[in-house]
Amino acid sequence: MDPEILGHYERGVELERLAGGSSRIEFERTKELLERHLPQVPARVLDVGGGPGAYATWLAEHGFEVTLVDPVPMHVSQAAERAARSARPFTADLGDARDLEQADGTFDVVLLFGPLYHLPDRAERMRALSEATRVVRPGGIVAVAAISRFASILDGMVNGYLSDPRFSAIVDEDLREGIHRNPTGNIEYFTTAYFHHPDELTAELVDAGLVVDALYGIEGPGWLRSELWEEADGREAILRVARAVESEPTMIGISAHLMAVGHRPD
View 1 (cartoon, rainbow, N blue to C red):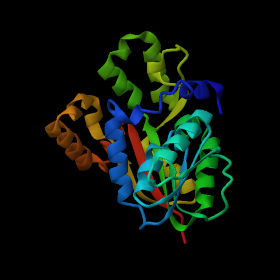
View 2: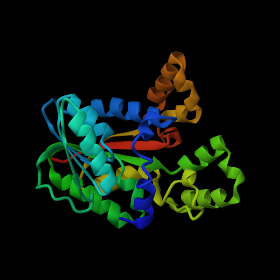
View 3: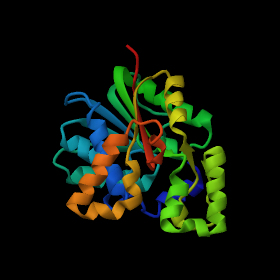
View 4: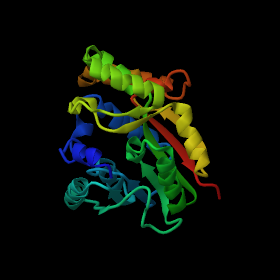
C-alpha cells in the first residue's frame, strides 16, 4: 500500500467518519441501495477494504456471514474490536484487494467499498475487480463504490477550498485525469486517490467479466447541504431527492460517491 495513503488512514480518520457530516448520508444511502441487491440470509459476504467494520457490523447483525479484509492494520484491529462487541461477530483479517487469499467462488456477495478509491492505475483497479469476480460464486453479486470525478470541485465550492490555489490545482488534475494527489499536507484535501466518471466505473466492471445490474449516485445533491440532516424534515428531503435522481445519467456524478452493482455470469 502506498505509504502516503497508509499514513492518512493511520491517523484514525476512518473510525467514526460515517457517523458525521455528509458521510452519514453516504452510510445510510449505501445500506439502502445495497439492500435492494442482497440475497437472503444467511449468505456469505466478503467485505474487501472494509475499514473499521461499519458495513461488516451492520451486515453481520442482519444475519449475514461476513469476512472483512483490509490492508491497514489499524483498521483490522478496530474491526476486530467491533466484531467482539457485536451480538453477531464477523472475522477481520489483513488483505489486499488485488491479491485475495480466498478461494474461487466462495462468496455470495463481494463488496469493494473503498479499494478503488486508492488505485490510480487502471491495471491495479482491474486486478482488484478481477479478484472480486474470482471469489464470488456464479450468479453472485459484486458491489463497488467509487469517488465521483466531480467530488473535489463540489466539495471545494461548499467549503471554500477553491480560494486556495493549491487546491484549485488539485481539482484541475481531478477533472482532467481523475487522479487526485495532495502535496499540501492539508488532511482536508484527502490523499492519493482516483475519481471515476460514472461511465468509466461501469466499463471497468464489464471488463472484469461482470454483468452490470445498476449504477447509482449514492448521496445525490443533498451532501452539499449535509447540515439539513440534523432535522427530520431535512433528512427526509435529502433522501427523497437522492432517490429521485439516483439513476439519472445527467445527475449521477453530482454525488460524492458512486455505486455500481454487477453479478458474475452463471
